[in-house]
Image (tube, rainbow, N blue to C red; front, side, top):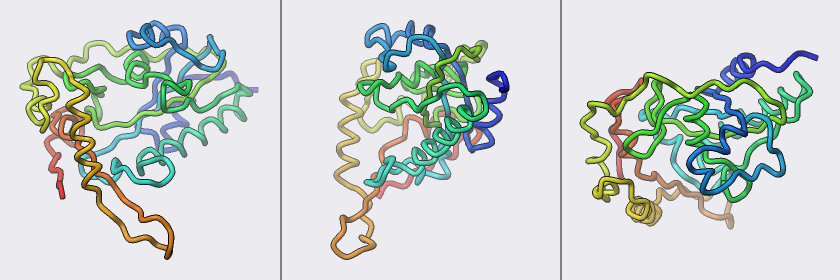
Length: 240
């Protein structure tokens, strides 16, 4: 049986469609600021590796992030779920190492994905309270999987400070002034989310008598205004 290797896992993940991948030990992740407040609960697994998968959500493809009432919530998340499941299956077969998906929600034995991504070297925390990656700015979505085997970590990232000297268009772009106090105010952001949910894009039901499908284009102005990444300044966002 082949010896498990982080570089080969990364190569496979990218081949399956992931944009970036990072690895961090469970021990290191347990020391992250968020998990010091809410300890890790990975179903009894205390040693091993968390693999973080990122999928780019370019500004020119806003539909990847529109929330709907189908499985997975968004087109982008469905793609991430597919990549994750296929990678889990490959790792089990290739290395005979137990691998499993990590639930998205922390309260369901998940992890704080931004913390995991930062510790794995994927990027840094931005002033807009989002993960900022060198390649895609904050325009990525994350999922994670768990290996019950130690693999060398890939981070954290050094020498990358995108917010230094930036005029912070992300802060002024917020329609709810969620950064008006100097720190991120989640309740302000949630007000915009509720407003977006009250104005969804309704789609015709494909079958008589079934529930109407809908899509909610949640506000992304704090991330779409960020000048970091491949689709710089391409953040026109139609609000209907």
